[in-house]
Image (cartoon, rainbow, N blue to C red; front, side):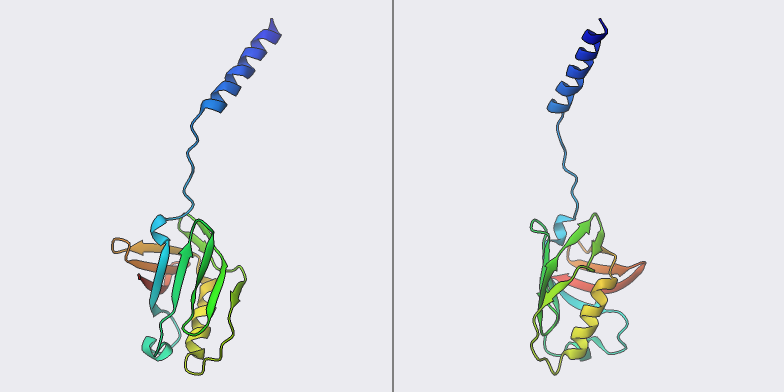
Length: 145
């Protein structure tokens, strides 16, 4: 009798688990996808236009491939993307080209030095503005390209 009851319970659990619909939790904001151009960076003590006189840094998110890439105003970079809800992690090593950039070296250093400090992001202005945040301080701001 107990074997029959346990068998029915087991089959009930098995049947319920097989027919339950699985909802996949989104691990990232779909509006993060695409290319963004930097228009503000916190802390360098140099005017933004002085850091990036010729070319502003860009960052591109490919969420399906978990990849991030872009240009730091001179060199291109690419790496693994780690996003969970609004938390983001740029501490993974990135591949960076090594072109000689006389005019942009300070801006390049500031950009690449700030990325690993970022802990979260926020998207505002109906998906047009991306803020990179370290703790509770907005460190970088981008606009959608």
